[in-house]
Length: 505
Image (tube, rainbow, N blue to C red; front, side, top):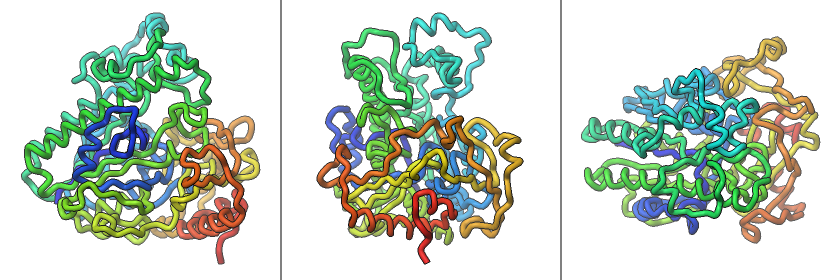
């Protein structure tokens, strides 16, 4: 068995023609959907980037115990399990967070990996005296706040060395993937994990893609929205959305090159192909940009998933309405290669849905450390917040005390306590460390959380989640399910208490 697992970052569900998108040209997503099975109710688990990848590697949710962080010593990674089962695993990615303090244990799970440089704020090119004033003229003021956000300057330096399409990291990722396929496609027993940071911001794409989406904006380069409420002018909003569209179209074009490769070498005969993302992205909907600080609306949490398997090629063009989640991908990839998942895995393999099954999860939880605990049963979505975000009890449970780009501080670590194991930590005690706080008392996860109101939406009547409803019967049913799933996940006691629940007896 052979598998290509393709992950684009920040890919909005409705950006793809395969899922009914009308505004962005993505014909190759539709081309793949005609051969494969589309999952119409696929949801995120833990957010954002690295928490989603921990779910993907381990087949269980992580956001109830931990913020952004590495794989833990007790985590069973899909890449390592496949490798131990005799399957060769190779990672190709430009996702530079794998190589920072908060993600440094993921890429080492594979037999081999290739890191493509230059994406976003990858500390790639050395420039002792960057042309700051020229940058301020070239780029919008949002993108030249060098003293406020250290991501911006490295990005603008990197762009000085990305001129032609072949220089773009997404092009480099696919070039490396094709090298792997050229060398190994005739052999059996491998998984290629091809992961592209695009269409994550900044939304920069070569002119042929960008020219497809004209706007009336005439200012400096504007392709990187703040994680904030929409404050921009209509012309600026249109420009940001057009740049995202251009980047999605570029990603889709490279997907087309992969499909061409499958056609040319008849890989459809013996190679599975999975396409998905880690989370979506708000492009002004609900008056918000991006993710993290706002509620987890479906533009963020409802994800595209397309799966082709040669054993189920006859099912091409069909759609699955069953509720699925990121955590299901780990046991699915293991199942494709005949490797049994460990007992800690709570995701479920998707094989029976590829075969025509219709029932999977009754409901799924999703969320971000310190924010709402969200649940959907496919019909309703429910965002459950603590009554006071500034006073909630919250701890990190870890043996790898690193944040995104730093270690836990010495002051924080002095408060650490060694506590008994959870059911998934292989009988290993873990550190319990108080979560970082902002000056106002909120959890310092990825910025201040806002709009922290518990709400219920009926997706059937209101797919855009614009009008919360009041339905006590539905709310109580979802709360019971939520409590049961927290118990299944062996969530800490405070995960129940912070949202007013008790652990089921």
